[in-house]
Length: 124
Image (cartoon, rainbow, N blue to C red; front, side):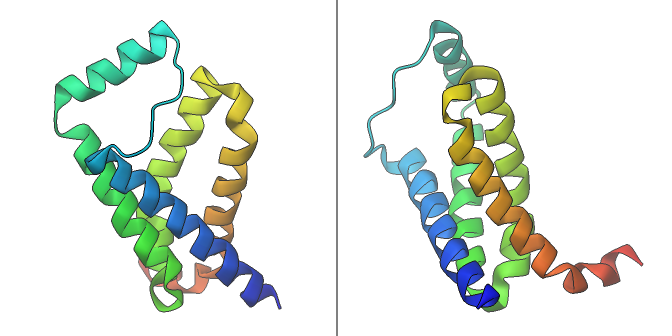
């Protein structure tokens, strides 16, 4: 039962990551209202040029990997740095949506903990 719940949650999590990553390339979802501070931050990120495509690529690849049970361990680790950045961004700039982000982080961490035996050879 636990594995079926994790499967459903990781597939949904993966779809959300793929959607978010593809949006960085195709811009099909409207941007939410942002404060001037957030607009300046995203403007600086856009000026860098390579940052949004890199994050979008990692979101797409990590989202696909985490949705496939055989590759979930790899996908969970690939997407973790992006999730940490998302959590920090929402803590600092948009705490009203923090609950959704923390649920997503919890799903990511659950996938990591469920596959901890696959990571042990790297640590020992």
